[in-house]
Figure 1 (cartoon, rainbow, N blue to C red):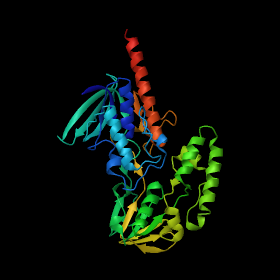
Figure 2 (cartoon, one colour):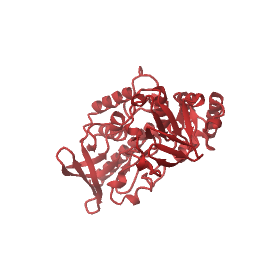
Figure 3 (cartoon, one colour):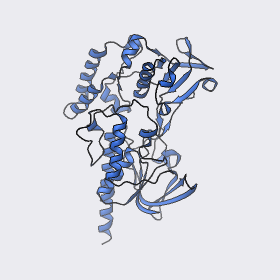
Figure 4 (cartoon, one colour):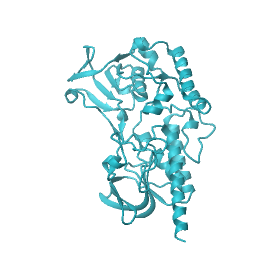
Length: 384
């Protein structure tokens, strides 16, 4: 199939790019390995998930979230918004189509994309001048290779497979990872009366969603250092000294930390209170696992029925993008740094790799569509 633009991925990044191209009347095709759009949101998120950012920071280009929607959407409401977005812009991804290889042909100045159709088990070829990698940051769930993990006799799952704490009532569950997913899953488990422990190794900022909303608004008119100082002051007032509970604050402020490392603050949903009351136990550093017994850095050990790994994701373009090393760093993110991360060589683009959430996806998509439009216009007039 010959088209102007191939977009890999039908998550928010791919949908935003498709909508922006649609508005500019630029032909494209979206390839999606799963059976639906926004598959991460629909198939691999836990039941209680709510957007941690206010809706104004989660809108995709050219279609605001309805005014009567709550400030912080539940995942079902955001999925409804995404489905309405697909319908409005008449986006028709090619589903069950997994990209195997994308290579650039210097002779024809086009991208050659080979993708396997899971329904027919046939490899299909797509040709385009432009290639947009929109598979996003959260592709493949990552589980670290801990000593003795293979010997664990209980259940092992990644956070992307976790739905609810209901099956774990009265069971001992260890959550590994203290980002937003890990902290919220720990809360959900405790709410369902599981005996819950969580591994917290790295320093984290713990804030409320209102604090982060305020901070993002203030960044439009105040330096990040001032905003950080205010957020840290409010967090101290709200939570007190959490170090005695095993939670240490980073040296960088929350906004600066996000900009430099991509690490987000933890939006507290009630986890801190359960840690303070002892409903959730904080543990440090797994040193070894023997069947259902897990040993920790302080020499203590506990038995668990299940381990939930909220240890993040890995990007996947390295698996199929030819000459990936020239475009991507070791962690699978573009070598070009913000704000030029979205643009590669040979009419290659990246959307959703800025580590700046849905707002970053939207900005990337608009930048990519505008750049493609400029190049097409320049090519048109050069031929006249």
